Image (tube, rainbow, N blue to C red; front, top):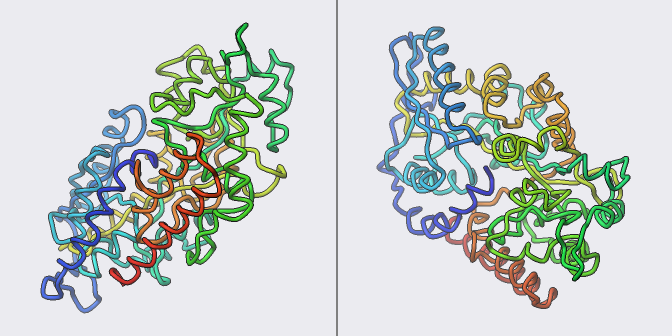
Length: 454
């Protein structure tokens, strides 16, 4: 999911500037009078298109099975063959970037870093303008507000939002009962009090069970930080993505809160800073009572790795400062038609089929994903004790990835400015110094690429 895709962001940072210039105007694919590449508007029976998407869920066979069922049903209905392929996350960024610069490309693709992909495609390759299909599928009103900016550039839409990743709080009900806690915390103050009751230590004072752990894996703190920024009433950038705002007092308070959970309140194991630490594994080993942010597929991992915890694992909306309003972030990915397609009409039919409410309910329920479409999240699949927190959390989320082409460089792992800042601070560096340095670096990347890619 989002953590997987961002591991690859450094690659795009190097590719963006070197490949953008390669898209010459003489290479532009042919279009018909409607502006649609390929322009086929007659009988589509017998047409063949290609569709690529990344791997999702903990069970690879589930994705393969549902895609097979959907493409077969689509062919029976339309006569169009969809040859699909599932791409490993380790290869996805390279393949998508090459597709956006004139290399081999599918007709329809599951993409990410949408503004970057559109920018390097330069209107010739990469995601095509599909505003008309977006409106046909319901437009802005059909989708959660937090995901819309990811697919829109200058008022045009370049993909249909589908998979959404918003993080809810995960907790062990048995631990809560043991500690006499009858209500899940809704504010940070309540979280701290609950975590104190849940934390266990040995005779030397070492934590043997954390009351709460940050959602960290491989010593990567950015995603937990994004959620906590939202809970503190701020975000990485302002609403129109022209200024970095995490250096304000709310941003400083957010970082201090993360440190205080470890150092002052002593409710989060200091091992969280170890590169080998994984919050999900810690929870499954019953060494943590609360994980401050996990996605919906976390239950699949629990069922596979710690089935004894399935009945006692609960989810709830993330706490924040006040107990009301925004308390998390949401990430999304769109399905896009590529400019280079020779079968635009057939591609449009598959896009509408796959991204319809019915199509998304079928796919996401099979793979345990939450969805960017409100109607989908009203399905009974999302009403279970485990799932029901995620639609509510989606309504209380803001964007996770700012919709700027340079975000892939700014949040690159492990050496982008944001991750470097957080790693240094957790390691003991001065907060203000690191934040100021990071703000400067982020602005330099933003300004330079606005010129180079503008």
